[in-house]
Image (tube, rainbow, N blue to C red; front, side):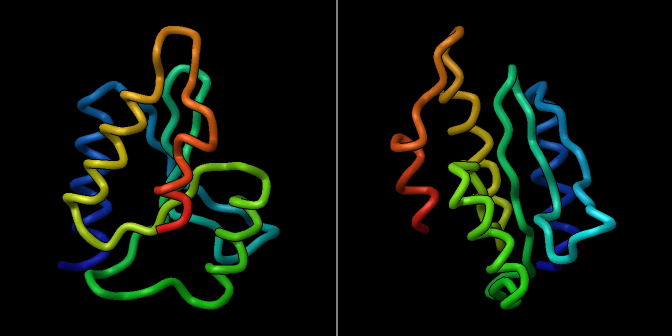
Length: 110
């Protein structure tokens, strides 16, 4: 499946769940993740790729830069994984207590 189709489906799913979805661009920095997802004061970033494709070296650098600041960031190359991340994000918000970054560790290391 093409990157744009995966991105469209995951973003639509997130919007249907009440998550704010922004196309993320940075004029001063190339290779930032494609999208930012926000729910109740918590944000994650997703870099979308065509099925089976990997991020470029410059994208990996930016993803690592965010991870090193304890920002949840993911690379998604299929709709099912994208939806699972969105569902986990929603489960992670529990009233006023967010899951800690350690609770996201398995996502951050994948």
